[in-house]
Length: 408
Image (cartoon, rainbow, N blue to C red; front, side):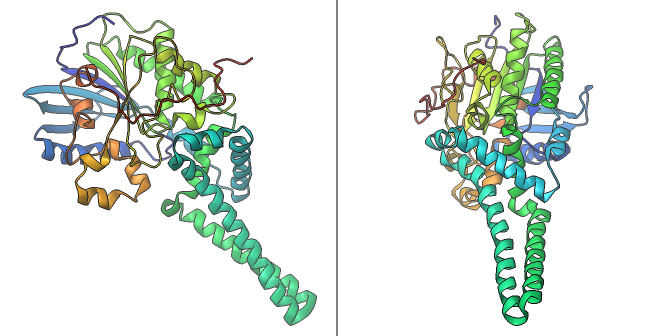
């Protein structure tokens, strides 16, 4: 795209793609409000939020004063939480059926072993609900067996039946207790997350595909507006959704040559969890296509301290689809252990799910990654990372067993 790379951003549109999250989008507004104020206190700039100013289904306006310049950014959440909620079964038997399907999909396809060669953290996160749910089931069976044996010893056949029934009842209550308190354990949440990706072996579900088409239209409209930058932010599983939307947008010729700068920021991505599956042809094709385009700037930020992401894994190369002339993404580290104070790092280090959201939060000593300066400041994403070298510890080995971008 032809434009002045030294241009100052005065107006920006930001589109945020959340991960697999059933919670209302106001969560992200309040997180932004709280953490922006904290970062402003550290970094010495001004930032404030106002109510929705566009036709966005859910968004807010950001007014910022940074580096002596005033910037207005309109941020919109690409809402798919309703799809997430509909995909989450409230039935315990249905959850165990999902458990079997997820385990079979990742093990039988060989994807699990390949993923472990990249980073063990996300794989452990995937196995955690499997192990925990099986343990609960074994607990229920063990209680039934133990109380049944006790009942048989005390009262014969009648005692056996009563003991088994009592044991199964107690086990069922234990399973239900964990289900009700999943906000403490994330067992069911994680299982539903991986089950949603695995249900069609990597094919985008029809309801989500339709929603992504709507998102594409929304972003295409923003590219026709009088703004300096259109910034797409994809967090967690929202990263690969953003990749697919931008690939479709560019393929369809809807990025004007003299329009706003187009930028993609992927944070804490888990792309391989989907792209390594046998039938993820479209996602692999989108990764391959987008990685060679000059219509955008694509920065991928992860951190080894985040155990829920494929930290510093180039999402294109590890999937085995890097083309000749690959340009993107630029893989950089948020370096939590360096950008957070020792006491902050010590407090958060074992809070795995909180750390997975650190990219959206304030840092004690931000380097070139400052989420609020990127989304609300006067510099283009391209300018901020111009000349930046990729992380030396990035992983670029082609690991995926499945690399085809279309069915045979």
